[in-house]
Image (cartoon, rainbow, N blue to C red):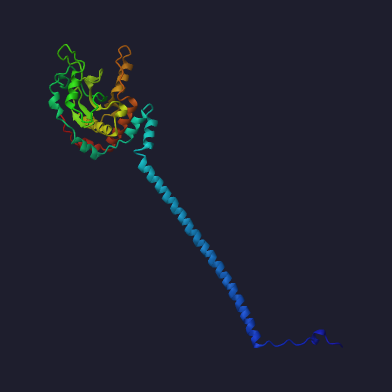
Length: 316
C-alpha cells in the first residue's frame, strides 16, 4: 500500500528565536500603526468637531453683535433723525418737510420745562402797560373765558437780539392813522418767543386783539420767524413749554390739546368755512398739519408727566 503523499512532505523547519522575535516586532508594528491610525482619525474628528463648535459660536456671537448694533442704531436714530421726520410727513399730510425736520428734533423733558420757567422775561410788562392794546381792562375786547391758545409767527423783526419794547410798540400802533391820534384798532399778544428768549408782554389771561373772530376767547403766543419753515427746534420747544405754562395758569391742563392749542392759520380757515359770506383775509401761520404735529408732542408730554399740575407758574 502506497503511503499518502502528505507523509512524504518534509517536516517544517523549527523557527529560530530570531525569526520569532522578528515576527513579534512585525505584529507589534502593525498594531501600533493601526492604533496610530485610529488615534489620528479620532483626534482629527475631535479637532474638526471642536473647530466647528468654535466657528458656530463665533457666528452666533457675530449675529448677536450685529443685531445689537442694529437695535442700538434704531434706538439712536428714530427719535431725532430722518426716520422721525418721515414719520411726521407720513402722519401729517401737507406738512412742510423743513418744518417736519425741525419738529422731529423737539424733545420735551420735565427738567427742561422747570428750567424754562426760570428764563421767562417779564420786564416788558413795564413797557406795554402804557398801551390799551396790552391791557385787559382798557382794550376794546370782551374778556371772555379762555378756550384756547393761538400760535402765530412774525417776520418783520429779524434781528438776533430782539428789542421787545420796539416790537410791542409797533404791534400796538399797527393800523393807526398817521393823521390822527392812535385809534387802538390793533394788536396785542401775551407772550413772545424770540431769538433771544421768551418774553411775557401782557397778563396771561388778557384777551387781546390778535385772532379776529376769536379774540374774546383766546390768548396768544407770537414767535419770531420769517416763515413757518424759519422756526427752529429750540423755538418750537420754547413755544411748547410756554403753552404748557399758560394752560397751567388758566387751569386748562385737563382740556384736550386738540381744543386748547390752535394755530392762527387753521383757525382762520375754520372761521372762513363757518362764515362763507363774511370771510377774512387768509393766514398761513400754523396751518393744521404743523399745529397737529406740535400738539401731539405737547399732548404726549402732558400724559407722561401729570406732576406738571403741581409745578407752580409765577406769571402775572
